[in-house]
Amino acid sequence: MTLTRLIYLSQAIPDLKYPDLKAIMEKSETNNGHVGITGLLCYGDGLFLQALEGDRRYVTETFLRIAQDGRHHSAEVLHAAAIEVRAFPTWSMKLVQLGEYAAERVRQIHLKYSAGRQFNPGVMTTQQCLNFMVELDALT
Ligand code: FAD
Image (cartoon, protein in one colour):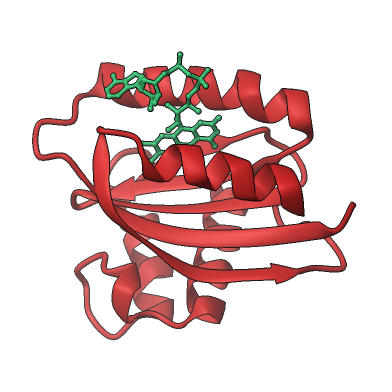
């Protein structure tokens, strides 16, 4: 058992609705809870940024399942590595929607780690993505 973190980004389908997010979270909480995966899912400007932490085998299986999901596409792995300690130990999966709760504060945190105002994790470094998510987790 090797503790591992995987971070990926993907594009949500254009007509993704709140019930879709709710269904994803319910499924994530159940499935991740069973295999000891924790993490954070960030959704904004039509993009997902997610961190999955747990046993490497389960993180891999979960990501492969997620990548096939019709509610998003174009998943790109930004980072996958063994870690000493979890950055998101508390939640089987926590959802943070940009532009929702504490919108301005979220935007400030985003600007701290990115060159532009538009949420675009594709141009952020892995460390910037991780720091951004850790601060979001602490905020909400
Ligand atoms: P079921 O829920 O029975 O699903 C069977 C199949 O149908 C799967 O292939 C599933 O992808 C697909 N499916 C189900 N509902 C829909 C729908 N409304 N539209 C299109 N396809 C659908 N799952 C986790 O376990 N952990 C996570 O952390 C996690 N994060 C996710 C993040 C994102 C951005 C997305 C889009 C999905 C995430 N999911 C996550 C859900 C994951 O993609 C699978 O849907 C889920 O794990 C499948 O669970 P299941 O094996 O019990 O199959």
